[in-house]
Image 1 (tube, rainbow, N blue to C red):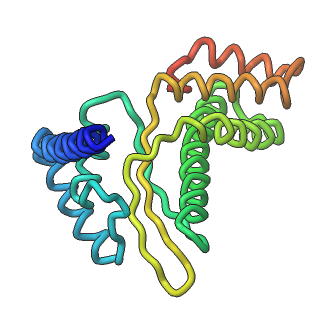
Image 2 (cartoon, one colour):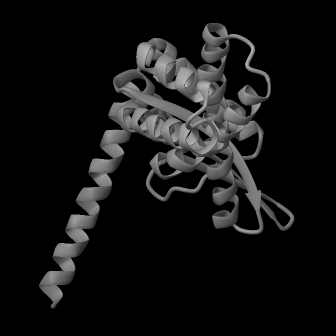
Image 3 (cartoon, one colour):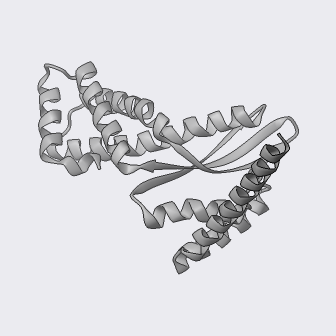
Length: 208
């Protein structure tokens, strides 16, 4: 039993060492612009009273790993704030805010393209836009991966700032599912719905 305990401690120490090394490498591999962005964000977040909640990473290391997502992979990254009676409640609020932010941007992109191509569709446009944004938020929420989290407390309110990443391949599928659900719900069998499907098929970039 004692040998097993010692081995566990060694493994834990090695894991901690590897984690710290990886975080240092993240900063070292950033572009000059990326390193500048990290320093500016650390300064701003500290001035706003945020602190790292992580036991393994400093604020600089967390932001560096988050920034590396932008520079080394096909990811979309989002940062959102949340507040609540606990860290858990505040994080749930931040997650909802991030999903809403993403969905709103996706909705603006596709409906702007539709309006350019199809023209003024009046009430149909508003109904489609609202439904699409709601569906994107539903499908994208489970894909948001937490990359960093900072916390501060004022009186009984806990505030958090959370950074999320989204793999673009998964996000594209989610947007396509949201579009399909929207057309089926609000435009199936209508000339507007047929125009939407035709436009998306011919302009795949709209949902990218």
